[in-house]
Image 1 (cartoon, rainbow, N blue to C red):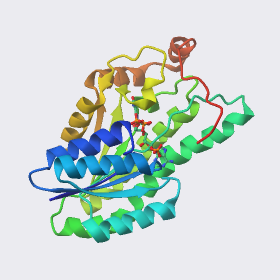
Image 2: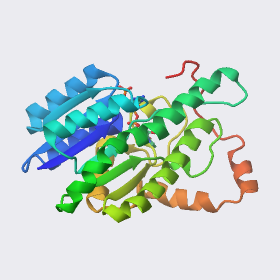
Image 3: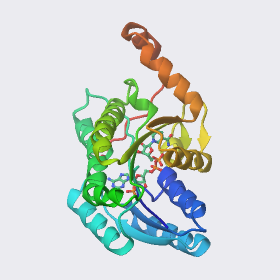
Length: 267
Ligand SMILES: NC(=O)c1ccc[n+]([C@@H]2O[C@H](COP(=O)([O-])OP(=O)(O)OC[C@H]3O[C@@H](n4cnc5c(N)ncnc54)[C@H](OP(=O)(O)O)[C@@H]3O)[C@@H](O)[C@H]2O)c1
């Protein structure tokens, strides 16, 4: 029996992961906790997971910026389903932002709070119980969803790139700390995946991957307890090359790069 907790499950990657895990562990049984703000989307998914894959499903409609709400959700989930084997901090937002606009400060704040603090709020309430569970030999793994956009600063995406760079560095610290407790930490950096987040992009997206294919590869990487992976692998090659580009060349390459348009209303 697997027990899995996923944030950002009301659409895109999180939803596809919930379906992938329900299918993957249908024979042996799976309990899945799903989190997002849009409760009707979560309820719809829960019904699908229960009816089509016999998964046990627990729905938590909350905002990952709310540490207390996530602590309550985690408490309830552990009481009902037990300590999770896998916790996936996937909830995230992407907003075009430009520092010169006063009104974009709220968007910067929201992106940093959701993409970075939301991840901390998701993992924190589970760690003590996972440490105990690990002593009895149970699988215990924390998985964070970062982005190739966090490898270098992309123009027009200052908030998003900074948040994903912070998420990657945070996950690296966490991985090092969790070694003492034998809890695995996996960083998944997606390239371009077809979801509502990318559906609004008007520019070309190299190596765009279907979300169901991505979810399968994601679950495979988690199963292998990979420390860091970029999916699709082609974007992994691009990300490696990006790291070595000197700042002067990076500035030239990105000067006229297409980017997400600004959205005036914050989250
Ligand atoms: N798609 C890509 O190409 C791509 C590439 C790199 C990284 N990523 C990352 O992958 C993750 C999932 O993105 P996606 O493509 O699946 O986008 P998506 O379809 O827009 O899904 C985002 C999910 O996050 C949830 N969420 C957003 N803000 C939240 C909040 N404050 N509290 C709780 N849940 C919140 C949303 O649910 P509600 O709105 O219902 O709350 C939704 O379920 C994100 O972290 C994103 O940065 C995606």
